[in-house]
Length: 290
Length: 314
Image (cartoon, rainbow over all chains, first blue to last red; front, top):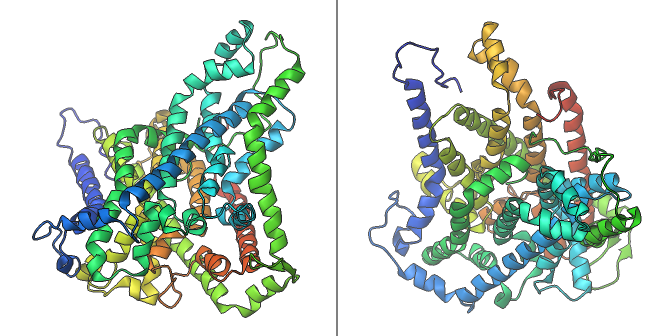
């Protein structure tokens, strides 16, 4: 930060060496940061004998067969199956979070009810609650219900607004909306339900989009929950299929493993490129998690 | 509004006294509960009930198939006095937290300060540095990490250190570096906080003859302290729960020599691999208490170093 080039107001603009150094530093840092991604991409195209023990990032020839092998899938389950499993879970989670969290957020942000204060405090506290403290009993409950090895334990909680982080995010956003609109709607005879659906919800779209994107990415990346709830290879997600490589990754399966890693990472990269504004702003304004 | 203020739950929004009261109060209260019903159901069935169940189970032997057997405090005494692997996982986790969190926050702060005064390219850098925070949580990147830090991997080739992931003293550092790599999330929050410091404060300090360093110490640090505190609490809580990178780097085993056996991984091992659900529940409750205590201690010490501007929101 010492390089911040707010050079004391000189009459003629001097060469901003400080600024140039700043950019060079940032670019160098970026190169280091992006190296693992470049490595992943390069390795997914390398022939088996070059995967390791070669400093070269670029493969001597492009080994597309890694991708054809990856597309055949793992444990006799095709990659399309794995992809659609992942999509189903992520899609269900997105739908659940957007619906349930916006409903709860509206009540907290705009409606009055008994115990509102304590309940809001409790909701905030659950953001800090470690996942693992409730995971085992949740597992036992779902096990009792015979729902282990189905997608219900992964999707149902989202429909019950258990991700308090998003409730909080939407509450914060709704509080910033002008109250007058709802009051006008109320004078026109709108009850709370019509005000919510016709006035507030459309205005909350940016927060809902942020919720949807974060939910998608986090669910897509999630490993622990999928690991404990799913054990039928047919029901595996891409993340879980990658896990099969963790146990037994011989040198020969390296190429296909990283080809599959690229495929698993692709949706996140695309989401990020398409929505980075929402993601970064959402992060900055609500300020939680990563 | 700063990023840190978790709003006081008691702060009821003001309603102008003139607001028309068309509908009876009772009906509007009813509407609130309809909106709240999914959340209430989730809070009871998926949060409160599980917490109660796990507290109960922590005093039992339970293997998922036979009914739980009450064993009193045995899980806890066994954990604390007879289980060296448990202590191993505690030491590993604490070491990891102590390495990863300060490094990550320091890097986040330095980069945020660098970007703060930038006119061109700020948006680009901000997004680019943030990207690993989203990608890094994936199994894909965790696998890359294992390969890069393995024998013959890039780090070995560059530094000639041999494979970090095979060395007990170094494997945890590889895991920690994956967390540090994801410094973008706290950085974005730092940057948002920095931009809310009024420029007049710096001008006033400059008029008083404060140099850059003095301004940093006397303006930036106190004004940023709530955001710093917020990042510290959140990253610490998250770090205590690290799982995926340790799982991937050690091929699901917590090795070498249990050096990457983080707390949650041992919990997973006891509960879901060895089917000692009671023991794992006791571990979960200790984790809950420890995180609670650490958070409380952070809040307590914060009184002496976190500075809240008195004029409220901005």
